[in-house]
Image (cartoon, rainbow, N blue to C red; front, top):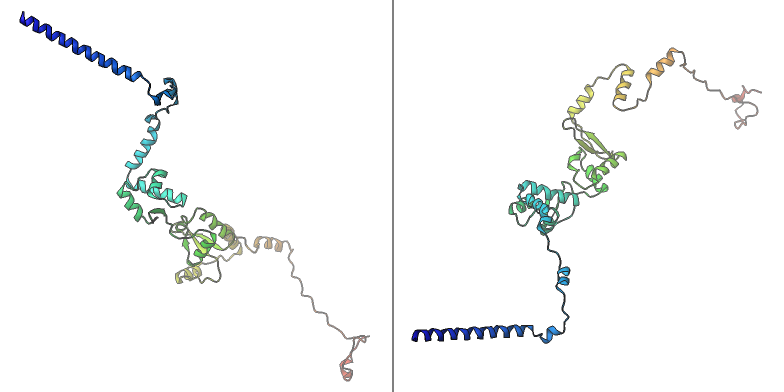
Length: 286
């Protein structure tokens, strides 16, 4: 009996404990449902409205292709990344910081030590005040400066050394050639154009070997052959030997006799001033 009574008492205590727990839970729910002064002043917003107003989440799949492109660039060899940056500097002719280069062509100059050091030491790149810019071989910016540069090279300057000076340099070279201010001649060995100043004031030194080669050239004895060679090289002969020979055969060429000068005779109507010398006027004609 004693054990049974003890079990019953334990059961009653558990029931009381459960009842108190349920009461406390019910009290907390009532407290949460009671509106606070701050929240009662605002109007409730439907859940559907909140869902519509939120910005849709960015899907990484939409930008996958660009991210892969950037990743491929940054994993490419250092030389390929350097070329990409130099192309950017050459085409824009502006100065860029490392961050601007990263935004423009996706090369992480600051994050890649090898790229940074190679770029800063590259002969085609000028690195100053934490900015990178293109460095051409000759610092000229317009046609006037270009002409002045060519005139400082009386023995010629390679056009290949001028191509990267500024974007319109090739057009300016052709314009100077058309104005006969410079000559553009091809080098027979390398097939590259050489720019020479066309200025009579510029002294030009000619090698003795070239002089001997020029003097050793034997000209054709027939003028017809000379005229043909001139025409082959794009020059117009000053003579037309074939036409002259045809005219000579047809007898159309005559040697005009020289006209004799008419003697001036003194007549009586001529005003005489030396009247005291009558022997000068014996042969007067009427």
